[in-house]
Every structure is written in C-alpha cells, then in structure tokens.
Amino acid sequence: MDKLKQTILITGANGFLGQKLVEKLIDKSQYCIVATSKSENRNFIREGYTYIPCDFTNMDALQALLDEVQPDKIIHTAAMSSVEACEKDPTLCEKVNIETVYQLGQYCARHDKHLIHLSTDFVFDGKEGPYKENDTTNPCNAYGESKVASEIRLSSTTCRAAILRTILVYGINGDHNRSNLVLWAKKQLEDNNRINVVSDQLRMPTFVDDLADACILAIEKEATGIYHISGDEMMSVLDAVYHIADFWHLDRSLINPIRAVDIGQENNRPRKTGFILDKAKTELGYSPTPFIKSLEEIEQQFSFYNR
Ligand SMILES: NC(=O)C1=CN([C@@H]2O[C@H](COP(=O)(O)OP(=O)(O)OC[C@H]3O[C@@H](n4cnc5c(N)ncnc54)[C@H](OP(=O)(O)O)[C@@H]3O)[C@@H](O)[C@H]2O)C=CC1
Ligand SMILES: Cc1cn([C@H]2C[C@H](O)[C@@H](COP(=O)(O)OP(=O)(O)O[C@H]3O[C@@H](C)C(=O)[C@@H](O)[C@H]3O)O2)c(=O)[nH]c1=O
Image 1 (tube, rainbow, N blue to C red):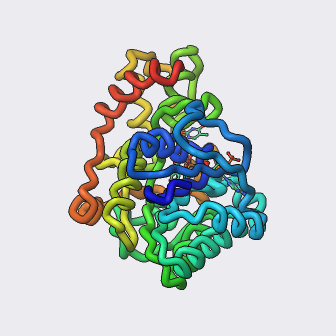
Image 2 (image 1 turned 90 degrees about the horizontal axis):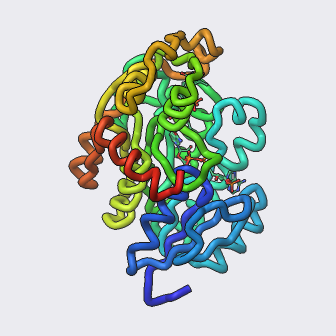
C-alpha cells in the first residue's frame, strides 16, 4: 500500500453501498483504496483499487487481512442484511453482524484507526418514528437485534467509531444482480406485471449516493458517535412506488396496495421509522437529495452503468 496516502478499507465491497463507495472513493487521490468482500469481485470498475476477498466468519483470515492492509480507516458495510436470513441462521448472523464488528473495533482501538460502521432503522420498534440518535432502541427482528448488539459491542471498545444508521436504501450501481425498491418497482411496471406494495410501512428511503457521501463526510471529519442518515421525506412504501410509476410514466393501476400482514411482515418489520436528521446535517454537513430529484439522477445513471 502507498504509505504516502491514507489507506481506506471498504468491507462489503460487493454490496449495494460498497460498490458505490469504491466508485466514489477511487476518484479521491488522497486515498489508497482496498476493497474486500466474501466472494470474488463483482464491481464493474476494476481499476484504481486493490480487491482482496475475505470471509469474515474466519476470524484469523480477517486478522490476516488487517495485518496485511494496515488500514488508516475502515468503512464497514459488510453484513447479513436480510431480515429473513438472520431469522433463519442466527448463529451466522451473530458471527457476521456482531463478532466481525467487535473484532474490527478492537483492531481500530489497538492501532488508533477510524471506523465507520453501518447500522439500521430496524434498531427501533417503529411505534414512534421518526427517531433521534439517542432514542431508545427496541428491535422487532433478529437483524435489528444483531445491529443493536453490534453497536453495543463496538461502543465497549475504545475505538474511534462513527455509527451511521440508514433506511431502505435505493438507487443504481453496476451490479445487475442487486435490486432495490426503485429498480424492482420500475422493472415490474415496465414489464406490465402487477405488484403488491405495502401501504402501512412508513420510511424515509435513502438514496445510495447520499449514503455513500455521508460515509465520506464521516471519514473526512473523523466523526465519532451515532448519526442518522436517510432521505428527508417520510412516505409509505406505497407512496414511494406511486412516485416511481409517475416519474417513469408507468401504469399505476398495476400497483395493488396491500398491508404488511399480507406478506407476513406485521410483526418483524417496524411500522413507522424515519430519522430526525438535524445532527447529521449540522455536524457532518449532510444534505439529502429530494426523492424526485434522486429519481432524475438514477435515470441519468442508467447509461453510465449500461443498464
Ligand atoms: N440496503 C438497505 O436498505 C440498508 C442497509 N443497511 C446496512 O448498510 C450496510 C450495507 O447494506 P447493503 O449494501 O444493502 O448490503 P448488501 O447486502 O448489498 O451487501 C452486504 C455485503 O456484505 C458481504 N458479506 C456478507 N457476509 C460476509 C462475510 N461472511 N464475509 C465478508 N463479507 C460478507 C457480502 O459479500 P459478497 O456479496 O461478496 O458475498 C455483501 O456484498 C449493511 O451493514 C446493512 O445492514 C442499513 C439499512 C438499510
Ligand atoms: C417483497 C415485498 C416487499 N415490499 C416492501 C417491503 C419493504 O418496505 C420494501 C423493501 O423490501 P425488503 O424486503 O428489501 O425490505 P426490508 O427487509 O424491510 O428492508 C430493510 O432492509 C434492511 C437491510 C434494513 O436495514 C432496513 O432499513 C430496510 O431497508 O418493499 C412490498 O411492498 N411488496 C413486496 O412484495
């Protein structure tokens, strides 16, 4: 690694946020970027960074990676991010979502390095959204529980860490296999397929480009503590999908409103989350993109990603 530059290690680099972070950070000449993920590299950009695969359930492999890379900063996006997968395999969920975070925190504490850790609105029960950073957590699924535990374990170290919680991330990157609410709804409606969309889950959906920018702000400001990072507009998932249909002039009549109970999500998803963004705006200079403007940016990005 070029020791004249600060080395940033991006974990979960194959993931939705991870791919966007690689794309944005390789353009910043002051950094040397190392990307890591469990599988072989899926980023369509192959130049400008080093990719090292590593399965974090192997703690020795993770330690060897840290000893080799000696990062100055770590942006930790890797996780089991599926609620259902975490319910199905709590042991693996604990290893990936909790033990890994503690190991990274201990490394950063020992070597005085800076860590950015990604968490979620699912740490809350969804009864009183929108939430401030110091509101009481009360997760309603195994995934949310693992993220609460990861925050607690991380805080038990002396690591300089910023925990960025976010919500329902959407947008586009080069990975045709990783969908999200916007791409899923747009594709289904373009294919004239009827879709069932929940009307009683309220969120502040987060543009992946804004989330990546927030990670970079936290890195550059050496931020520590918890920050809420999301879009600034509270909306039901149904309303979000109506916006998507209207923006791309698609057929609203294909959208069938359902309730969370209809897809078995009445108990394992918080009803109303959303974040109060004052702290991130004031301390990080975070500035979320309005939802409709983000759709305009996504439309422009389709050609860049050859999608
Ligand atoms: N997407 C969302 O709506 C939200 C996401 N978040 C959080 O933000 C972060 C990023 O989310 P997102 O980009 O959607 O995540 P993704 O699910 O898209 O990507 C997660 C990545 O973690 C990697 N990973 C999983 N298990 C391991 C392992 N054992 N060893 C190494 N790497 C592993 C995967 O690697 P590979 O693909 O190579 O197997 C995958 O690329 C996560 O922490 C998530 O909890 C929070 C709120 C909302
Ligand atoms: C499958 C399905 C989902 N939905 C809604 C439910 C949900 O609000 C939204 C997205 O579906 P998902 O199952 O991906 O949603 P979900 O697992 O609820 O998304 C969560 O992901 C994890 C990582 C988080 O941390 C949370 O912030 C949140 O983004 O779409 C429908 O409306 N109809 C459907 O048929």
